[in-house]
Image (cartoon, rainbow over the protein chains, first blue to last red):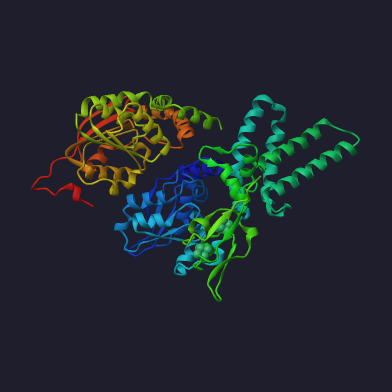
Length: 363
Length: 232
Ligand code: SF4
Ligand code: SF4
């Protein structure tokens, strides 16, 4: 049991890009009664485990929604965590017979995917958005479900960087390793050291690499290496092919590791969507890059006449774009538009339809 | 990327699509559908197909003069089904609905259908969903009506289970790449059926016990026992 679970966790981390699912349905923590809170999460194995760790000391219910084994954030943006997944688990778990309250606490990052009006209409359950991170749930519950601004913001600390980074990098690393092992033995050792080394440096020092967007950072690194390579070729007298190839390899690796340096983070826009769009790849399967690219290139606009200042956009925005004006007419204000990462949570959740993305029309 | 192209190729022709899926089910999909229609569907039956996919079974039922209602969550599948139904001139005998399995409680009235059929569908659901669907199936079936289920099952013997695992790994990978769905063989379908109130009247396993056909009946209400459809 212990070993099997640790193995699942390790595999889940290394192959984060592949779905690893936990059985959807109802989980019970402590000794809940008919008024205990009901939380919801996605059925990605690692997510369920992490949430379970923070619910351990509470008396509550947890609904694990079917999201195809994908985590909350990706599932909500990718169409795997929607009103339908929520409705499905509410109806089939029989939770309505266990509690008398009808409030479901969703992770805030589910906001870009779940149409809570549809959930209400189909099941009678009201949804509210809890903290972004499961680790804030105990404090959230202790303060009678009051959310602080800190609980609303996504963060990108070292552990998370390495955790997510490994998932993105490891499969590629493995693939290249196998290819080299078959075709290019000579470079195997260098690659095995340089790959993880660069990975650790790039993700470890992520916030300190100059450049605001992900691809600025990438460009900076490539330029740095490029200058290094040039200097070497021009200035060093005793040239060796080996050192040059090594630098070239590093440049290639940096590109591979950082290919979606913005998109892997929880708060930069993905640079990959617009890039693929420019290359003429409009869509792969269910993912519409053209559509995404337009939204990412656009900017959020607020219709002040319909806005009632209800504060929902403020509540669901993971980067703190909004401020609610309390003097005079209550209304939302777009205070820091530059922080917006185009997740569309606010657009979907605004009950008045007062928010939209103004897409720049390209000529 | 390659999978996307492959999917498009499959989607471009309904027949090719079905051939692909049939291959993934170890060739069982087609055969068992014919068997179901031959043995269990009679003229004038009102039939519900849960998870009708590309409509192959619905068309076979309608060709035997049954009135079929089929539903599926996938719009892509329903498009293919619609084409197929138009080609065989059966539009007046088949009604398609775009909905998920958990919407059954609002979509159909009690005791509406004579037969309920479902092939390679239950194994795509998680276990609470399976229970829910069978409970709902019981509700919408007329007393004395039959439910016919054909699906992948878990063999009883350990050796066969291991063999199944080995054969399934590549198949599961292909299915996942193609359809982004994964299935897990049903473990205790007999129990699930019994729990929902059904009485199993026939079962057949094939392909090294990897595949099972189950036929179960909804009984008539008795005076001395509570009607199971009133259970929560
Ligand atoms: S959610 Fe909509 S109505 Fe509410 S404050 Fe924001 S913009 Fe205004
Ligand atoms: S303002 Fe931007 S970042 Fe904030 S919720 Fe809306 S789309 Fe997401």
